[in-house]
Image (cartoon, rainbow, N blue to C red; front, side, top):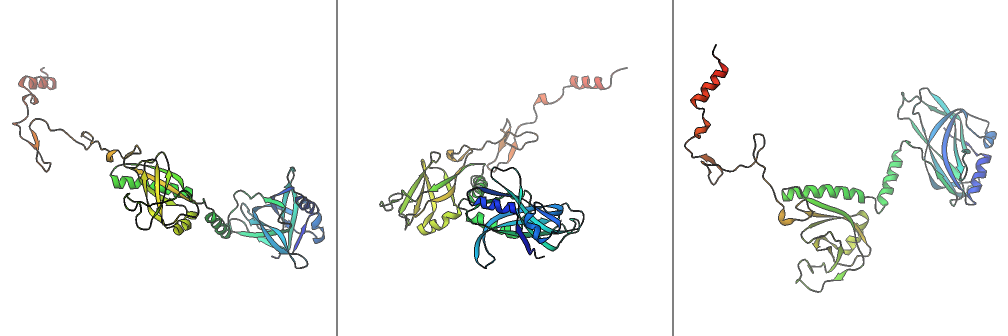
Length: 365
């Protein structure tokens, strides 16, 4: 499998030239062909030979390649995926071609073709469901050209692509904010329930701890939490939903960790009416993004004195509380006793009532 024959089509070369004058070229499709053609005719080809097989497009990236004189020149590397999805019979693939269109055009045209006279065997999907071959068509063109690729929907992703996407995701400053907020929301609700013994509430939101506005505390230890040890700088992040009886939990985003480390950010924060107060050893050099959870003990968003609990009334099927009636008493340990003289008289059937019931059951003949 060498794919040692390749060519720009006449139309493809014209399209690439147009990109250098500012037009945008979108690579839309890739196809394979089961027959080979004469190498000298590849430049005039408009379609692949033999059975036309749809291939997947994986993406495009800037690259460098050697020209015929051995010089490195700017290039575009287009990823093409060959699979046997849906194939019931073996075939041999000899050609791979990429198609595209310029902005303003409605018809796809062949840009570039690769050919391997020996070809590669594509087995039936039932024989090898994991079959996959990745090719890269390297197109020599200025990196300033506007070329994009429409990635095929549903195309399988290779392990290398997964690694690349994870690295790109982790490099994004806001990559994890949604995950952090979701985890914070779940965690704080569980924490309130465990600490307060009841279902509490939490307000979860994204905040920015600013680099500007920090003040140096010069009051010593007169203010609670202020001037403690080396944390001499403080800043208030204002928010009208904050009250001084809430408990703040702060999770810094990944891109803020280094800034926090250099500033010596205090691991604790304090709520005051209308703001959350932070301390640090030094003024931070950059803003720090974070997720803030404000915990309250009651469902209203305020602590309200620690919340309330209503004991349900006991029924035949529900465990709950009862009041002591006449003749009942309890000891200090909760033992229930009855000290009356017996059941009230009206709790027993009278003789005439007994006779009436017997007459209903055993009527006289």
